[in-house]
Image: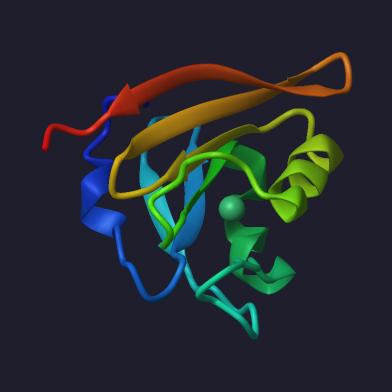
Length: 112
Ligand SMILES: [Zn+2]
């Protein structure tokens, strides 16, 4: 999934977010965080239809960085069974929790 066309979701004023299903389908869900330029929040009722098929979560950053924020770290650790993609206008990074630690598994820079 690191090679998916993630660039289509980049938005430099508001973070976008969603899920990757086990069949590889990428679904965007609404970001309902009160400060969406810096954070994202997926509501339980929005993700509920996909819970059986979840493979990963994804979200974008507006600041050009695909490094995880402190909030991201806490979220990722709380969901150790899910892969996590962070997308910025520079590239995409895949994170995975291993033995309680968040590891960067893979990174891909977008072509300029
Ligand atoms: Zn983030």
